[in-house]
Amino acid sequence: MKISDVAEKTGLSTDTLRFYEKIGLIQPPPRDGAGHRDYGEEVLGWIRFLDQLNATGMRQADRVRYAKLREAGPQTYAERRQMMEVHREEVRVQLAKLGETLALLDRKIDHYHELEAKEAADV
Image 1 (cartoon, rainbow, N blue to C red):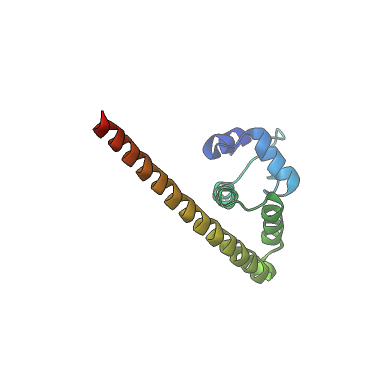
Image 2: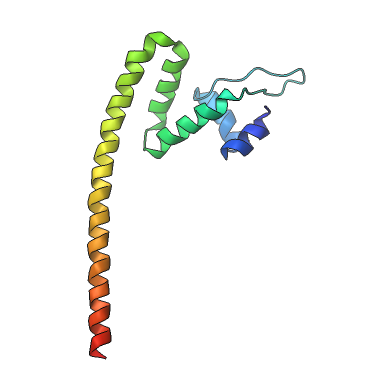
């Protein structure tokens, strides 16, 4: 699969894909006879996973570290699991904060509904 195909399927630009290769988030794929990148289908799942980690707020440096551990093989399972456990706790804290923020927004919206209803009744 050419880099443009991967870009289309993932929503990433070709420049981003090249950057991901440069920093070690994705492994450089083999090249075809013309010297063009020839990605395997498995890169799509890996990029989706990286995107999900990014969506959780995982720092790029940690994603790169995880990618390097993954490339190193099974002997890094424990370290990768530990990384995920630490990050999971960070996500739980974020979710708790978001829950509090959502409750605040709900209270504010309810307050404005009350003010609007009062104003309408006074008219």
